[in-house]
Image (cartoon, rainbow, N blue to C red; front, side, top):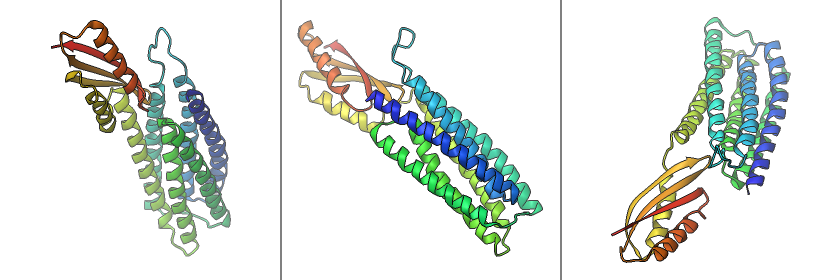
Length: 287
């Protein structure tokens, strides 16, 4: 499963880099050539996408490394560190685009309509939709925040480029201000997505607790053991996309050490079978 997870994420990163380099080149050339602020904003977005795909590739390679003496629980958190880089880069790109779009809106747009702008928009939507479908398929097979970040990015690009296409078509009818408005909208959307990705990664790096659904499943498992008199504590710590679960249960003080040890092992093995649980540690208290 780990090999499949690594390979799927690696391919998503490589395909993303290749696709976005191609889109960056054609959008930048056509955008600057015909003075379309929306298309220029879209090209900057593609530059950010190249960085995001590169971070996906590097982060996936580091996080897939097995545990060692210095990293007892592996390198899974690298996914979230590199995902934070993606979020931060998106916020900086958004700030630059927002400034440029406001500037163009105030001073007026010099957009020159060309059918090349329309063609580039359509090509971008098609390529981005294919990349979205691929990363969505990969994400269904393995939970990975880097894949999720890229999937959201590809989906957003389809939507944003559609608005770029609308602004280009409107310029054919002499409506130029919409081009700058779309540039502003793209910058705000990129900024929002970047902040969302950053906060999601930040929460994991700050050891956010396991989700309530998984916690309820753990409680159901523990309640299945009649020997347990009381659940004293359940805590967790994230390790990449999974969690280490710490459980303290209270048992009859007259139970033998061998019996209590076997029960703890049984709980650990059962809970660790849950999809997003990396390891389970059970501590037994006699009462």
